[in-house]
Length: 130
Image 1 (spheres, one colour):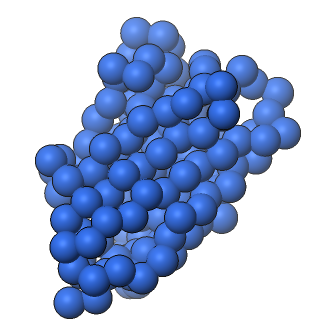
Image 2 (cartoon, helix red, strand yellow):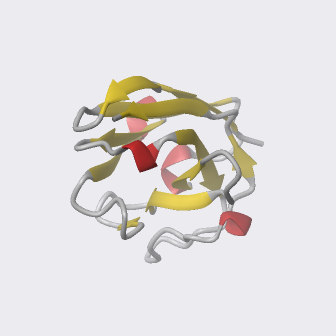
């Protein structure tokens, strides 16, 4: 089992920045062996992939909407994955969830399908005003 807690959400004006954190606790898995993804869900919309990081810091992937603006990183010593979000837009508004993939092999990049992730945090709200 893995417990994930997100933090860092809030309200920001368009063009601003936020850094989200996802910290794992009560995990029977070695954190460095987890793939971690960030997903978001806007009101009335499906949950969508935003960014993911594999078991190596070089293994990252981004949704097209996030490329060039968001950066995902991990600090395995702190059992934390970060999502740095810059140049935020109103369409980035939503609840952001982090999720853990316990089945990712070492050489693989992060998976973008939410069904691949077994454990989820409760989410943190991000609101971008125009």
